[in-house]
Length: 427
Image 1 (spheres, rainbow, N blue to C red):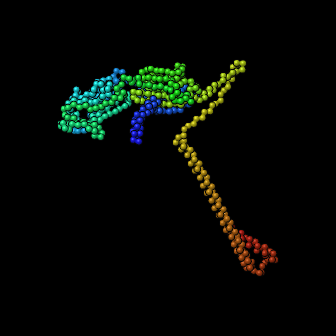
Image 2 (image 1 turned 90 degrees about the vertical axis):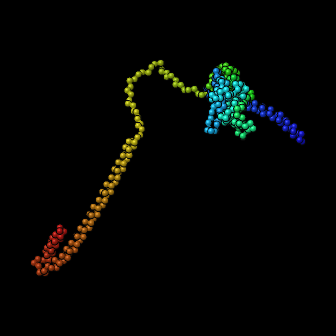
């Protein structure tokens, strides 16, 4: 049983690295999908499938390659905190030492960008060399930045000279006056093969018709940063498809397709490979071709009978009415508000006048009724007093009258009573 487990472990060690290498190779070949779009356009139109990447722009300096730079910095914490640039170096220029005291004493191998050894060599160590050194590698073209920190301590005792790891960085304890090499090694081709950058930049477009597997897709065009270009199939030869000649200068690898047809339907993929920087990107576009647009309506020319021109009539055009709409402003609003308030005041005045007139008429009617009732009382009281007077007057007459008969006597008495009654009324 123990032998079987040992054999399985040996097989796993032998086979798994191969499987990881195959999976890593396939992923790097296809690239990472960074964009996917569905595009639908009518037949007969022009399509532009965008594919931009600033990291694919070719900007190498032919005279002095300053794309790759290495520089060493020193950080001192005592007696005061300070940061000092020790030296820097690029493939197209000599190394530059910033402090005159360090010239000839501190350096980096001249073959650094050929073998990837960027170690800092310090001869005749002095006490002022104490501090934290940082090795910085910058690749401006690939936008890659790496750094390593090493602490240097200076001692006067041989017994204290040593090298150890403090959990964050390597620490060197060096004897005063000796030489030391602070290691900084990076042997990736990214830092060593700068002269082949243009040969490792590739951009290509693939076309996958409906129903075709991805590994059977058709290659449309290959573009190289060196200027080489390879077109596949008749589509580029007939100027139906095109990619700009200055694609690597602008970082624009967009594909333009003119006069779309139903056969152009399918899956288009833009592959950007920068083997030097380790860049592998893929952009996918699913193109659908719809029906063509209807033609624009055109007005038919007017045809006269017998090609005779229409007779001219001297007609006088009537006046034209132009409606001008002025924008409303605050004065316009205040004007309408004044009209509204004036109307309310007029209505209130009319209502008040009607109420006052109605009350006056009612008051006059009451006074007239009171007068009539008073007059009736006076008349009734006069008649009563008249009756009494008449009775008294009639009773006070002597029995021995000079009238010849009773009829004459009664007529004279009636006249006297009427005369007295009229006098009372007029009073």
